[in-house]
Image (tube, rainbow, N blue to C red; front, top):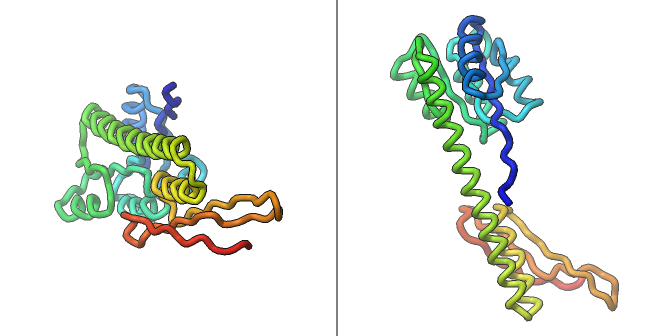
Length: 210
């Protein structure tokens, strides 16, 4: 059974009401769910309360500008994509935007259809990345299932469980505790620690009873 996909949520940020309205109308006409903010500070307030998939923001705004907002979003909500648009496009600002983690950078004036195409491309990319992560988790769980059905060595099975759990869910540390019937105590049966580069892992020795 396919998982129910959450409808993407978008946020439009621009201090100019006409531009803000133009972008909102184009997005809603294309079936997207979108909210609006008048400035960067208001956008951060909304981001703290609502999970947005994509933020579309003007570059030049009073107070917190587009690049500043981009930086804050990538610091606080790194999985949220950002598209910048501006009437003051320069090579320098476009490079700064892309280096800052923006998905794309659009000069004003832009055709609403072009904007929607960029949004669609961005959200399709997000969906593919999320599906890849989901499939990786499924593969890890399948490998764990095979280990559970084929391995009768309890110690080896415990090591396999913590290693697969660590790799599947990207954990730094994984520990497996088993309850001993005779003493009614918990024993750390196996532990797994991801190496600093996050590529491989090291199985930790099993300690004595706690």
